[in-house]
Image 1 (cartoon, rainbow, N blue to C red):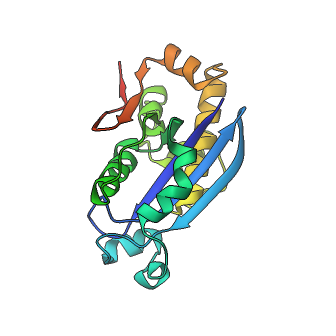
Image 2 (image 1 turned 120 degrees about the horizontal axis):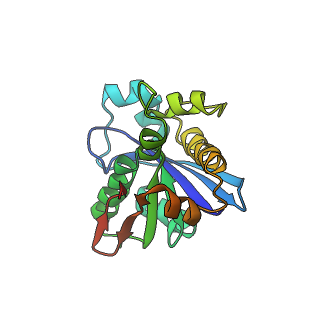
Length: 195
C-alpha cells in the first residue's frame, strides 16, 4: 500500500493562493514521513475568513518561498505517485491553479478522494467531513485545517477504509469499490468519481 496524501490551505478565495501544504507519505501500509511547508501565496494577501479557518497570517509567510520554489522539493513525492486528498476536487484544483499561475507543467498522477469514498461507504453519517469520518473510524489526533495534520488524517483514514474493505493495495481497493481515479496530466485533468 503506497501513496501520498496531500492537503492545501489557501490565503484567500483564489484557489491558487496556497499558503500551506501538508503531505503524508505511505509505504507498505505505514506512514513513513510527513511534510509541512508554509508558502508565500499568490496573490499575496489574506482574507479574514481564511485566517479564521487555519490561523495562518501574512506575517507568517512573508519570508517563505513561493510555490514554484517549494515545488522543486515536493515534486518527487507527488509526480507519478498515487495521491489521496479529502475533498480532492478542492486540493487538486488548488494544485492546478497554482501551477498555472507559475507556468508549471502539471505532474502525471492518479488521485483519489476519501470524502467521496466516505459518502459511498458510510451513507448513514450526517456529513462526510474529515473530522466526522475520523471520529467514525477512530482516527485520532486530527488538528483540522493544519495541512500536515489533515494529510496525515487522510492517509490514516484511507488505511482504515482499506482494512475494512480487505484491500491490500490502493489498486485492489479501486478495483473492488466502484471508483474511478482522477487523473492529472500535462494539459488537463479528469475528476475522481464513482463508476
